[in-house]
Length: 260
Image (cartoon, rainbow, N blue to C red; front, side):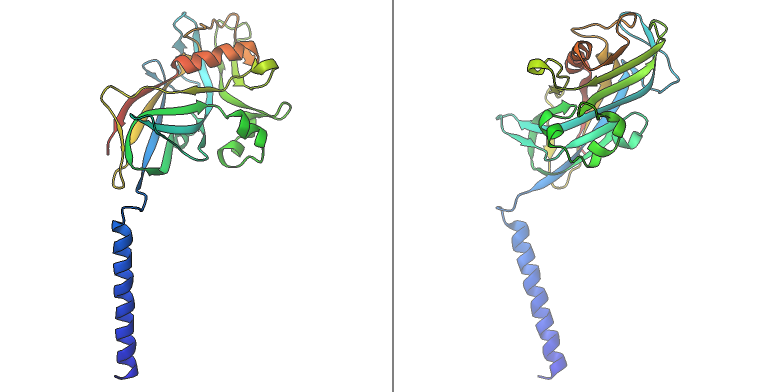
């Protein structure tokens, strides 16, 4: 056999071996199967779309207001199954900004395949990650979302105007976790329910989407109704804690899930 023919045969054998090995890996049941899904954040004010600085809205208590800025951290995303087992998405920290539409689409990758029946996430940045420092990615994307003086994140920010406010302005910086016995903790974890008989099906060949309605009115209603005549500028402390409880009670809901 001449040298060139020998080289061709050897190359063919190498290619065939590689293909067989690849097929075995693909069919190996011990290889973890994963998929992707997306969270689509859809901010609104009740049934109305949220438009910054242009539209006027009304709270359940009758106070009128506009919104010039609306931002929040969403982190520690976890999916659960009917049997109670769960998958926590690693290093899942996102900053959602109404002024940046791209930030309202979150892609989650390498999720183990399965039928998931629940979603849990933190509104804000957990204290352990805050204390760890060395912020990168979303946690370093907006310096205005961090208090240098107390080393705490602003978990949710809403700014705007209202004729009922004594200053005509609205400043809601729902921030902090410190204070005696955590008295100023505004970090909240929520688990908005999936629609009845609906599951998130993670498959290698699917790209499902969870559409979350994010209702600005949730800041001002719920267990601690807010009137702008008395609460119009809160940056941490007891009033922010009450607003955080409102956020946990009703700011997020699952509208629908696209199977894709």
